[in-house]
Image (tube, rainbow, N blue to C red; front, side, top):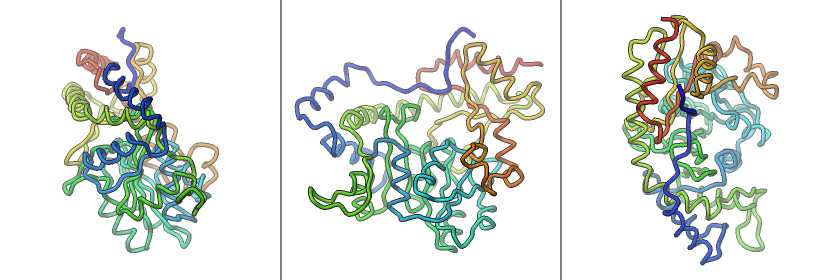
Length: 370
């Protein structure tokens, strides 16, 4: 394989289309602090996603940190070990103890059947992740949260545009948090957002992301600088014009992978069972004992051939030094996550990826050791 192909590459609209946006920023001389493009993008995203209120942020991690602060979450929060470290790092930044619970072997999301056993008198919230954009079992999670009076904050970094039977997956829980990082299906280079259920919550979050300021002389909370710049917001406004095209192309690539890998012994493709509308943000495969070589051997062979997949997520969050000492981090408490982190490989998927390269990747995977 001669192409140098990575697991994901950012979609970039034509440069000439972005120049008028830059000219507007230069003309009005507003670079940040909720300028015209910031306001335009918030409204456009609310309309596109089918949500009432959205607060833009400089990145998804700061949005997670702020979401926890906005809901005054303390004590212990139940979350998944199978995610990017920003999920649990946001808890530590708020002085909250993460409690890891194992995942479902089919969805790779938090297993609701294991939640109640992890609840203690110190538990105040649950932070699930819609892993790979595949919706969590939101009804089961909400039922447990209601029974124990717990908050639910969804890390929806992968879930832009995802819908279940009732509409946007982002409407579930107390808050949902998006990432607009360059690797995401919709990006602003760097960025993020919190989906807010009502205007009052959005107002509090808007104060918190601007140092806690209400006006020039009034600070009501120990806020942070989490504002999205006009440059990033303008890019988002332009990107939104292409997002349907981007998602359609991702769906096409997903279909090619599934067709070509179907029947390859030892390879399992995940199904997005709970989504009425998916976003094809990742293409993970599970490599089991029936495949002739290990996940890591395949990973290295693909890299040597110019294809750069990702062992996503590896290692587990619970295996990093700052979390290893937690009782909930013990491998015997996380058998499914521990097993899958050794088996999952995310293959390249992005709009500019040619079908011929996808076919080549699939032929290579199918040919190993057979």
